[in-house]
Length: 410
Image (tube, rainbow, N blue to C red; front, side, top):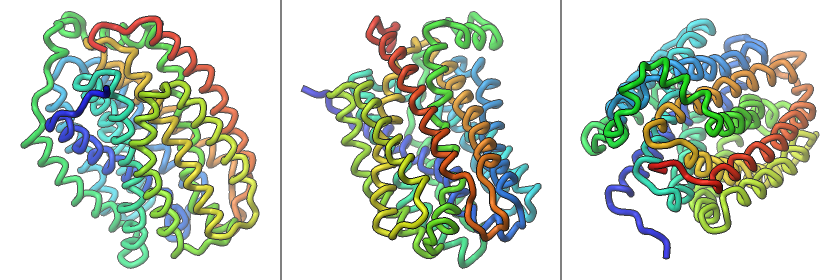
């Protein structure tokens, strides 16, 4: 019989999902705004790729710096500190008048926003046993879908009527609700402090201990490639639809909304499947589905709106299956005293590899003019599929280590 969530656990899941919604929305909003920003700011695809990757690079750097301190403080206070900084950075994006200032604002946002996910996953691992984490990750994963259903269509609506700054200011307003909930309802999380392990080491020593432990290195290696596909394809997704497949900009909200709605239902189901069918098995099925759709989708030269919607639904179901199962499985690697540092390093490596991926994507694809078709998108799809294949082997090793034995506190 499956364990039931307590009322407080339900609150934590809802809060963390809402937090992820705002953070993911801040990143994903750039994808549908890509076609608008390239034209209005007069920038190239490589410059736009730099805007996306700047967030990732700064997030990766701050994650590494925060790792040494991640297990030395109450996780609630740590979460609140970085979330306030994230909201400030998003506000700066909402008032940036030029490309260079937008780039600087994305760096500030990344410094704070890139650490929030790792703190959230550490909180999940602290509160929920491994047998429940698939369901929790599946529910939190709905934040990605919700960011499309509610955020991206509304963001496009705002951008087409009040300019591209307005979606960022919208995110600031929504984020204030989550900040208040953290202050008023989230309980202090200090169980990891009772071990006294992190306090005995200097921040640098704690970072090195966590970064070099062989068991953890296996998890880091798989994490580095997990975000590659999303960071490569998403920044130019809207441009590909508009310029290559001749889907009008006005129809993009419908595509994101229908895709996101299906993902909201799929996330919890995939979480349950991950807990019952097996986390690695779910990851394999999700990876095979994702790879097949990418190979087909990136080679399209024409497509109806209905076909685009169906392919996007299948693609996001595959991606969700991979993310839910891999996050739940990897969370079993670190022990209680190393969990914050492990999650911070893992998030940092994911952001850094994602930054490289977004920058690389900007070099692979290009346009003759800001309104012409993307060139090189099929090549980009092939590169993504190769990385998907590599993650199968890396996650197999993680699964083997988890089966061998769980650390104390997992």
